[in-house]
Image 1: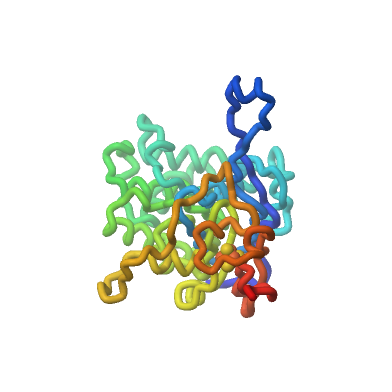
Image 2: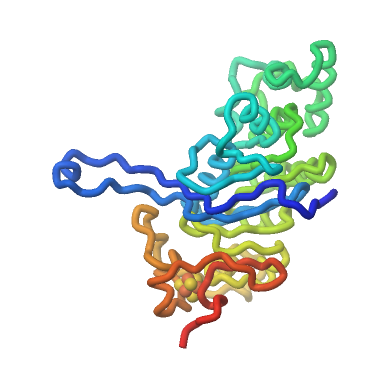
Length: 334
Ligand code: SF4
């Protein structure tokens, strides 16, 4: 596996809001239209051949980020550069080329597989639309793709409903690989599967990533899976990236109070290490009403005056360990 020094994907200041439908009464009262703040000033970079895990509680914006990167959602502002190209400005053939090179795999492949098409037809269609192979080479390529994801060649003759959840996820991966992508964005790829099947699919992804030198964004709420798979980890909270570090640093020496709380709350096999005190107190605030200053301050045991007025920016605390927290930005609590 080769990790390039230059980022393949670079996200800067990415912001996305979803306007909320206004009731007649609130319009009549002249109240301002409200919006869900899904992504706020997100900054990230991913190197070629790297796997970046993106973690956070449900509603933290990680799936919105994934969908905005593949242009399923339109960003409000910010920039996404892929191999130097300005992704948010692409259209026509250039956008189709980007969408071929950057493939998204969804949590529920069943909903995106036509129930009346056999697996072979699904793969032949993917190969045909983008003219990936001459017609006479397509049957061999279909068998090759099925073998890559650990399915027998005769799977091509069966319909999606004849497969288990884990096998359907393999079909989803094969369809993505048909387009020979450079980058896979896996959004909660295995969340709906049993734990034993999860491990098989994650190991398959790991094997494919190394064999094909893929760049992978692995979006998940399960910290154990992210740790197993990722070179680096980005932690999100209420639409903001609060920490980015190597997997080892993020898990062994997390710096942001939210990451520390997430890890303390994660299931452990050692009953002696469990604390009865909740690691993160309070409810996740509504993304319609994000706290001022640091979004985490309403649940942070270390919060101090500055946290309510000033938004902490993601900055390097050494060795590329990025943290957005005033505890690390010079003027801490007095
Ligand atoms: Fe806690 Fe303040 Fe750091 Fe936010 S900036 S995580 S509130 S200490």
